[in-house]
Image 1 (tube, rainbow, N blue to C red):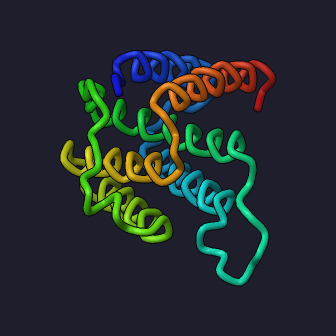
Image 2 (image 1 turned 60 degrees about the vertical axis):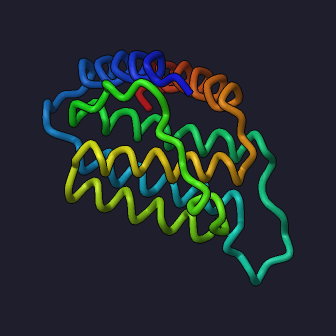
Amino acid sequence: MELTKLFQMQKELDAYIQENRKEQTDVFREKGLALLVELGELANETRCFKFWSTKGPSERNVILEEYVDSIHFILSLGIERGFANVKTWPQSDDTMREKNMTEVFIMAYEAIVTFLNNPTEENYHIIWQWYDALAFHLQFSNDSIIEAYIAKNEENYERQKRGY
């Protein structure tokens, strides 16, 4: 999937948010924690780990919205560290896709924490690979991800205007 447009949209949103902030501080760690929280919210909506419950996952559109909430923060973290030059989404390999969804979530968490503590481009790519594995398990197409990202990006602007 082509990421150039998404990086540009995220840069513009980040700049808009930064313009309206009172403090001009480095928010890399805050964005990292936000990404971890969003990943947890996504896991919660899939219910993949809730072995004790017979209730199924949330509706597909709810899960997709949680997924793209994470994408906003992945893009933003890459921008923060100068990795917005990633043109195409780094793909997961078969060993990543063969893991069950719970394991993919755990590995995505691990990749995020590793990146936060050692923000290299290689570690950044690994986050994208685990998110690709999640998209594979969730059966999200590139088009559905892009469409949902664009819609959520617009919603985020509206939220900022309302003082969210």
